[in-house]
Length: 94
Image 1 (spheres, rainbow, N blue to C red):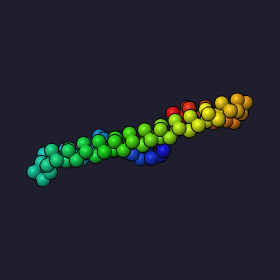
Image 2 (spheres, rainbow, N blue to C red):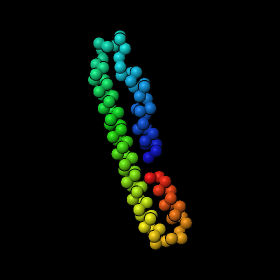
Image 3 (cartoon, one colour):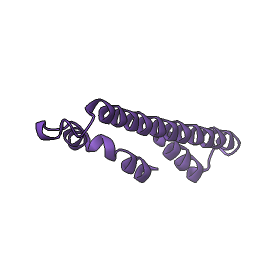
Image 4 (cartoon, rainbow, N blue to C red):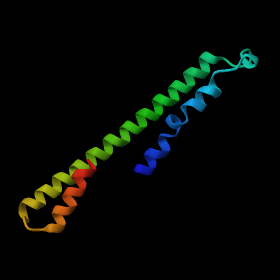
C-alpha cells in the first residue's frame, strides 16, 4: 500500500511543475484557456486526494479488523509470544 500511495502522491509532489505548465505565459495566453486548465488541475488534485483517502481508510479498516481478531485470539492464548508480536505489529500499522 505504501508504494501505491507514493505513486498517487506524484501530482502533489510535482505541484509547482504542474502550476508552471498550467498557467500560460504571455505568449500563450490566447492559445490556452487558463480558467479551464486550472479547473482541470484542481479536479485532478481532488480526484487524487479522494482516491488516496479511500485507500487509507480501507487499509485502516482492514488492519483494525485484523487487530480485533488478534486480540480475540490473544484472550484465548495469553502466553503466545508470536501472537503478541503480530498484534503489536498490526497495532503499530494502524
